[in-house]
Amino acid sequence: MTPYVHGSKRGSEGSKGGSKSIVVVDDSEDLAASLAILLELEGYIVRIALTGAAGMELVVSSSAHAVLLDYELPDMTGADVAMALRGHPRTRKVHIIMCTGTAEVTVRERFSDYHAFLAKPVAHADLMRSLDLAFAPP
Image (cartoon, rainbow, N blue to C red; front, side, top):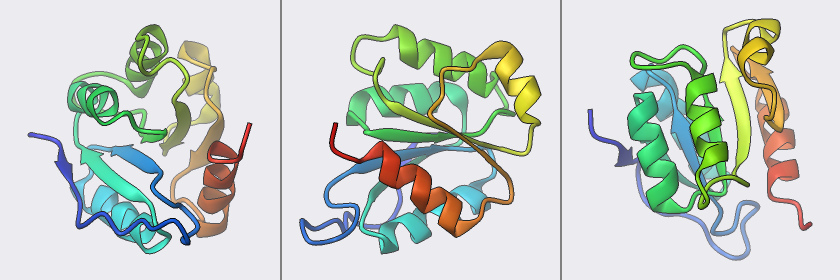
């Protein structure tokens, strides 16, 4: 399936997220769309990919600031996606938030260079706290 931009670009300079962009990579279209709506309401620009390959392509092409990454994807693991992102010059510093139902110990066995780990179902406050850290000034 082709990656797509969910909804409109609602970000404004006065909103919490500003013009910051996020890619949600999750094979559950309903969950990804729900996260996109929630994040757009917070002022973020959100794009969705339903496979790992589409997610990598979208993160690179959109110059996303952060990626919410599921571990269990139909074509590869979230660890594979994350390692590819870290290995690409345009995405090596992207803020990776693992957002998955897979146990953290399992994820860490394959990839541990993420900024946050959120277990599904994700609490809104935990997600916003992780994104606040992602978009905090250096």
